[in-house]
Image 1 (cartoon, one colour):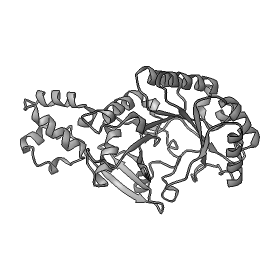
Image 2 (cartoon, helix red, strand yellow; image 1 turned 30 degrees about the horizontal axis):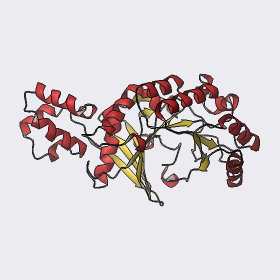
Image 3 (tube, helix red, strand yellow; image 1 turned 45 degrees about the vertical axis):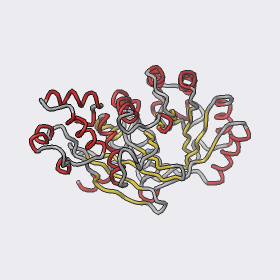
Length: 342
């Protein structure tokens, strides 16, 4: 797919077609605007025929708007597979949560994305396509884009699709493309330790967020199967390495599940592990997933947990739930539309 190519690669592609170099510029501009092939007016039909098999089929299958203004997008690809993304509007800009895989194989016990396992990875261009489609839908262009921040927190584990994700990061931050700053990009991972080291060694400095969700390895393994492979100590050491390489503070996401990880002693144990680290703890109220037998913690418990962390000197906040009424909140993204149509 043409969106998988950077500008240099696109120029080589056009050259191989026997076309003039300026055609690559025209094609690149059309791709960034998420134009359908028949909407491009400055390219001949002969040229369009040559690129038609590689040109992306830009498609928003459906979108839902929450009472709080959050918009959930369902994107469909050429093979019929879909993923979901969420646009959240804040005073400082618009953040788009993108997906990196169709489904997920991490198997976290509270999350809807992995209910049917992993179907396939998304290519770099398919991840980028989500950003371009939302820009176009919000009536913006590459120079005045609606999406100001990108978080890789949708369906899938980004570091489980490492090569495509890092190519996407390069495409997203390219100066002759959308020109995103890495400071406006957040990557969330379950804690695939070797890939955290690799991300740092490969020269990336995006904001790193770890889905922790427990204060110790035993409890974490009950919530997240990946904890059987990587201990919390190993994850913390990898985060320290990332910080030393990039100078970027990292964050830990902690979803509070009633009766499992929300006790006072859990907060104390978590604080003891994170004391002195250049990190933020983001507490997340559990969002409803009908197939998961999990209950959210009471507001009073969440507030008490937060206060306990703060008293211990941990920088912590409680995430505001957005888009829950349209199934667009943390942990709720799934292949729901496709399932309904079968």
